[in-house]
Amino acid sequence: MSKIVQNGVDIGRPFIAVQVNYRLSAWGFLFGDQVAGEGATNLGLRDQRLGVSLGRSSSYKKVILTMYSFTGSMKTLPLLEVMQARSLSGYCLSHSTGDAMTLTSTRVKVPVPRPSASSLSPTVAATTPSSLVASWKVETVSPTAVRLLCSFTSFLKLINFL
Amino acid sequence: MQLHILPQANQLPLALRGSDYYQPKYNAIVNATNCTQAIDTLDCLRHVPFSIINAAINTTNATTWFATVDGDFIQRYPSIQLAAGDFLHVPIISGTALSPPADESLLILLI
Image (cartoon, rainbow over all chains, first blue to last red; front, side, top):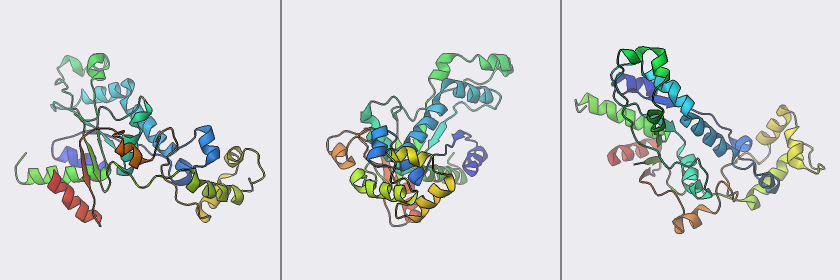
């Protein structure tokens, strides 16, 4: 993941990456009648859901936005959610549960104003308009796709396409 | 606009199973941790020392656990949900290949 982020910096397209661990094997997916009876099923997927919702929480975004306001002139700042493709398939199927945390809004880059002199004050940065924070969206792709996208953008840069 | 990119997968994940398949595996772990006699086997498992239950998970035939059709997070079998159009309707980039390198080549072409 760190190499992916570094690649984004190297090609002048930095982004924020959030990586969440989740339980695997029987720790995350123990199943049986008793487990189902308690509703403690698919815990690995639920771990990911918790992580994603944390990444989307407004306070978390404010921290990122505050960090961002001190950085350069980039106009948009994508936030990548990286998830195993198999897990993403599970989320595609789970939307019907009516759960609030479904992947319904995933890929929109939000324009972020260039930091002015006044916004370089931590106080000002911390009071970023909530409407701007609320409009943050994220991308959902699998790790392999991120790697590929980075290598692909590197390729485009190599041929002076970007 | 949202987009999902799923190398080596698609909207239909690996065959998801229910308790018919997993209950014997669960029972194997219960037996290996001396929880067979417990009234609430799951609660018993929660109090088994880590080293013991970790060994049970790694030594029984119950080492493969994936997402399940639990009627909650995933309500029905994926094939049924797909046939009913009951899934997230978003554009996807999907690839399937015998080997990851070939898959990556395919994905780049798709982009």
